[in-house]
Length: 195
Image (cartoon, rainbow, N blue to C red; front, top):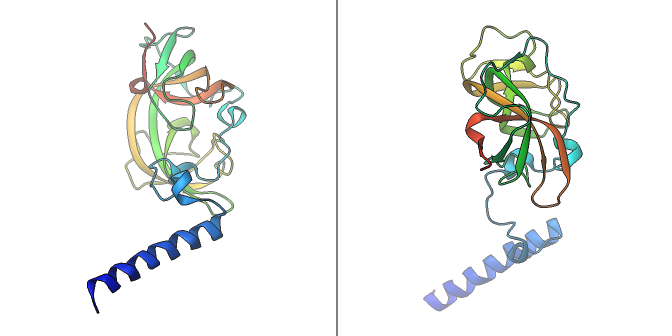
């Protein structure tokens, strides 16, 4: 078979893949960028990214200790350098709480079977009857947190652990301008001075 025929078959194959994708998803992969991999898509695909979902009541878990000398004091402003969800990165935040604890990234499966990988962050006090902190990667735990739908009560695996100060923050999303209140959690490394 000639090179020209191989190239023609290759073009037909690629066109068929794009057409199948468009039919199945109802989206144009060339216009929407859906064929590109986004490292944050795995974690949050299908999740509600509204300000209401990112907000919380401001209640803190039992046993959580306020930070004695936080870098960012309550009421101060800081710039968020984290993109756990759309509209966070670059937003100006007001610190509404600062706590010393162990934070974890966790992977878990929601009640409806959706697999969430490397979710940031769950704190030690949001785990059901945990051993002493910090827990080792690979440790299986039960989550007592409802940062996202389907999280509370889920069985999870610890991916990483870090002892640090975590912050609860209020901010307006950079994409929609919605107000987020008492967002849990960002780490000290994910905030920068607002000056």
